[in-house]
Amino acid sequence: MPSPRYGLDLNYGYASVFSQTTLCFAATPAPTGPGAGAAPADCGTNSNLGTGYYNAPTEYGSFSFMFVPVKTLRANAGYQISAVSGSTEFLNPLQVPGSLQSHYQSPFVDFAWTFHPGWTWKGGWNYYGYGEDSPVGPTSPRNFHADLVTLALRYDF
Image 1 (cartoon, one colour):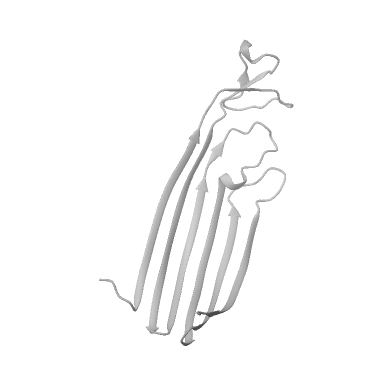
Image 2 (image 1 turned 180 degrees about the vertical axis):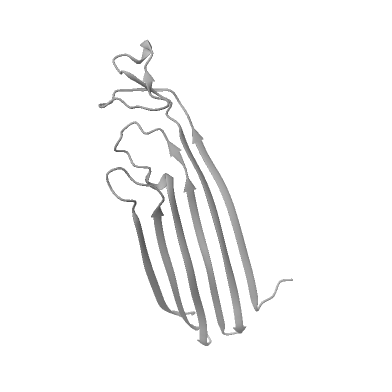
């Protein structure tokens, strides 16, 4: 039953982007592995044939909880995550999977306190975290995070 004192929000989503095409290309050194073969005559002077596939299945999930202990105070807390487990044809041995193999997460907490009619203090904290799940060629996987704090005063007129 809906309640003005508390609430729960749950979300899940899945999206898959896929494409594939035949492509002709020149590369030094010549690529190896599946999909990398001799090009047909209509490729001209390019000497390699690729499948040009790109697959990026992505899952997203989040939840948040809202709590209103008194009419003048509202608080929210939750968590969001997005994960990609994609793949593509690597035409260059130094090419990195980057965001095709990654996860992004963001827990959060915020509040709003109306201390006088028309005046509201707001505050919030977010954690932003990004990480790649696989080596990225000659470098280590990229991972970073940030903590963001926001304070605000709102006046309604």
